[in-house]
Length: 327
Image (cartoon, rainbow, N blue to C red):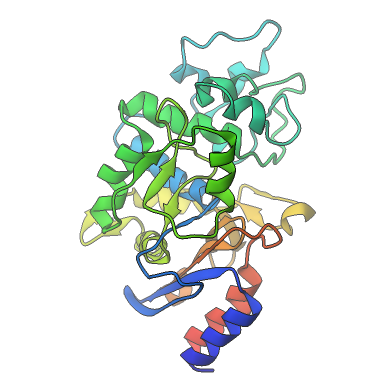
């Protein structure tokens, strides 16, 4: 299969894909676009944002802004007013958030209550904890993960976008991002569901704190650069952007996620696709993916517009795109 046939196949079988960029052995070897997207256009990469936030936590650790992920979350929010009778929250650590093992006083994501508040970090803290205590069960959350970017904002005195621009994005050649604040519910929905290209923005709360569970807008080229950085153990042109030890730690399995997530393993906000071969991925709804294959020194980035029936697109990458490159 040549590039033209692959283009046609994707157009027919994966119609919401907007861009694919592939790096191998440190070089871009493939790039293509669909749905009237240009190479420089961005899409909302949805939950793949989580994996980028994991890298930012590693940078904050390296800078000493965070001492340890075993520290309790409330150590960083000493002014937070704990609700009467709540005890579990005192034992929740940063690691619990990174591994999706933090307990919450809610079923599912409390979008309405958090997103209608003025400070999403404090509102998310209101849901942290609960009567069951620390169970270490996998409990996938999106909106309440905002606590992590709130923490980055707290320790750095910078918005997460500014912190990422200075210490991650711009040093590896990713265009700087600015905050995007939706002033209405309709604007929030449009940000998620609109199929048109987006700018280099990070969705944020009224405090200017970028969302941790979703909200980043990237091109596939930018995502591939992140993938290559991970392949290079956090090093870019001789500069250590993310500690190599952190890259190794966040891509080790901490649990198996269950049938809802096709029994994939989970690291620190990264999905572990193949533990033996150390293949891992950032995955966002609608099939936004950074697929990293260290054995073949391969990073595959796919961006897609909103299509709720598409979850991870890993099967397509491994069944079609990866064999096309490694033929």
